[in-house]
Length: 161
Image (tube, rainbow, N blue to C red; front, side, top):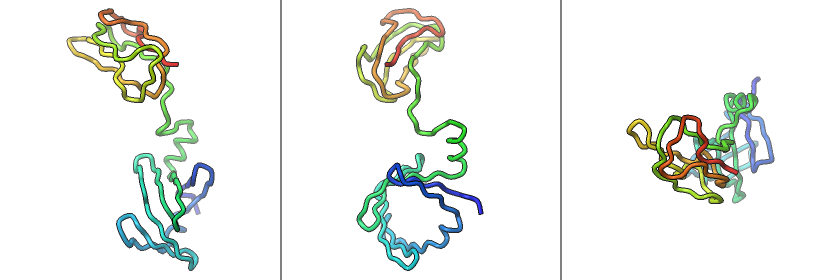
């Protein structure tokens, strides 16, 4: 029988689950995100504390013990095997102008720490203001432009450490 899910608990314990083994689990929802589970005639009390459905991560409590659980299906496993990992920070080290334009605003300074999606710079191009957000968490290494500068397509604007 083929493997349907891989489960990683607390970042170190790996389990392989097949769909058929899940059907043998006797679980009854007794409250909101609270379950009573019988497995091999042993009772367990389980509660889902927090969940991120898109990242397939869950913080659960089983018999008052906390666990971080990541669940991967076959597609997730294939993506990982191909060298791609969803949810991992991007390794973009610079922001370049995608088109010619004029720098209207710079919201960061050299040495400043930024979080993903922080506003970095505003470029006016083709009668539109284009905001550039940080593609990842990081520190600004250099700013190659200043307010009022005209930039060409592909010109370096901001570089990350």
